[in-house]
Image 1 (cartoon, rainbow, N blue to C red):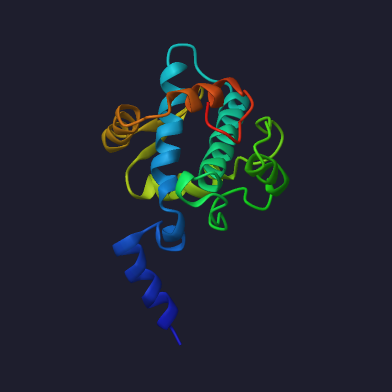
Image 2: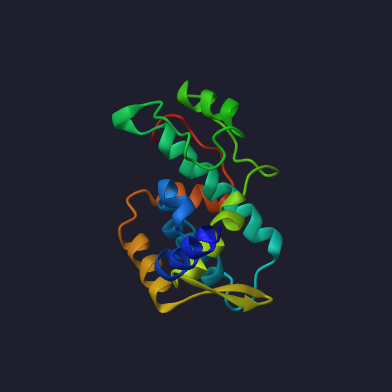
Length: 170
């Protein structure tokens, strides 16, 4: 009937790249921050793709853990969080106060899921190896705001080193 094509053309013009992810829009700033972190730290030497993958797996796991371990609502529903099904066992252990290592071989869907929307709203542009992505001025502003407002620097440091996560705050 041609109605869907018309609908899609309106969608592209108004909200290109973000309509299917509105439940998890926080990942746009999280991915922007994470890319800013790893690319800034490796800007002179370049970064291996495996380093980006490992860091993003850790970030994704940390976001899921933070969602589940929220002090106000312990065991919060994480159905909209990336990796919720993949890391069910680890999240159960965290909720019981056990130490859980960051995953090195699972997860990491944040990049494939949210790089398109980040491009669409002007946070990230493609780069060239060894710097695969670049933050736009808008993306750099989000990265700076995330750093300034970070109250849990030790979580970031653990994430970047791949250390274990703890179910109880240190």
